[in-house]
Image 1 (cartoon, one colour):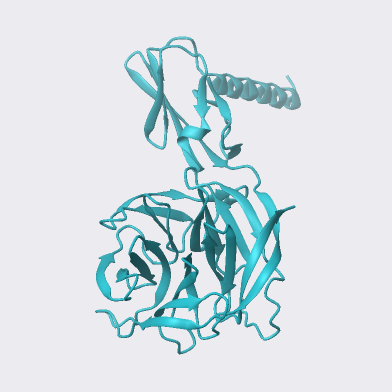
Image 2 (image 1 turned 180 degrees about the horizontal axis):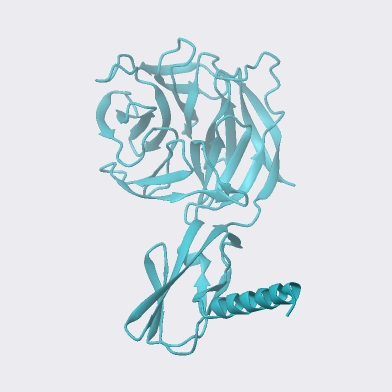
Length: 353
């Protein structure tokens, strides 16, 4: 036999043996590793089994068992129940006292969000010394929390909507035990109390809504920083710069869990100031003139409002004058937005594209 023929023969044998080996491997046929799946889809989990001999197969997602079977029939993966984000799939095959394991991973993302633009209904004056972090509207007045940017002092304010005049103000000075100045962040109203976050001080304040007297504090737990805060009538919702919405008990301020936020492109980080409106969370994205509309049950971004071009001040700085501040008049169905040290606060109408 010639050398060339021998090489061809050996190559065929290697391919044949490799093929036989792959056919005997226990592995995922679908979904393939790295696949992206739209939230809500039911996806067939299909496996390649070495043969028909088995005792049982156990399927799990991120360590949680979702199905146990004693045959080779497919399993349906309910993406609605396992939620958004990267998910690790594991199948364990048991036969003749032995275990064989197969792995796959998928990313579950929501559909593309609805796109919105805006129309300015009214413009109001806004104090340019307000490094706006939190904004609420109640009984005809705005309540605003501010940070300590550009030599400004952290404060809590009550503001006349039509004039922008600050009619009540409490300043917060000093430093924490580590020497870090108290830096005000998001705030919300719960009954007769105002709750206000600090940035990296891991401390929240509780104030009397009428007098602005400090009546309590609370510490952060799993969340590392304080960014945005809102109240849905049953629980507090908090952000910490990541893509997570944390849920807090409104009485004890203890964190009860969190949900990650995703859009069709992936994780949505830098979620900042929050407002709860008609079952959805409206959120500023730090550094962008964009507000996203989040479903707090799933973490899916269902809408995106493009506010580019809203604030036309030619002297606006690239840093420390970011859009930040969303307030909603639930009775009048009016939406207000502003930014850090902006000289305007806007009442806007949202229009779907």
